Image (cartoon, rainbow, N blue to C red; front, side):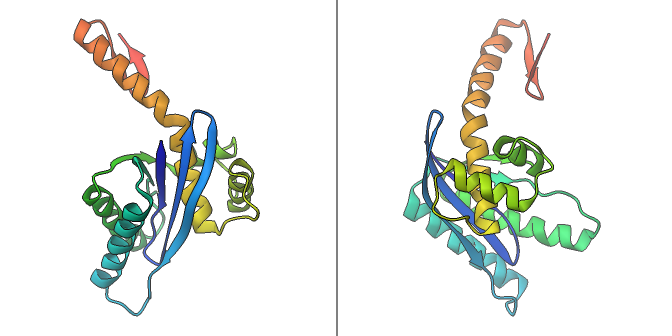
Length: 182
């Protein structure tokens, strides 16, 4: 399974692509889309959209993983980040990719083992897990970590969804928030 991970941002959007074969992970590509600050908001969003479309076209991923934004203390910043995330979602949808979303806490926990990991810890673990010669940039590391998170959690989610469909059809139980409930 080839996974495209994205760390959305209005100024810098990180992307990372890995191949996952069970527990084996292999680095494919990563980078940062740097958006010129002099552009208007709509032009900035188009830069993100166009570049992510090109990344998807060039790397041919099977699935995408995207970091969910958190509400920070500045509502205007949160709204702008949400618009960058929307441009990323549109690029992925336009590329016909299924999108899975993870919080920063889930991503850090999957890669480092704790949800409160520092950026440097994420960079070091991504470097280690993908056997890279050097640490990736912070934006690329976050995107690769998102892809790694999906590589670890995605197969289990698919099994739970299939199990949930089977159980719902039998009328016995269902899945809510990743847990079986009767």
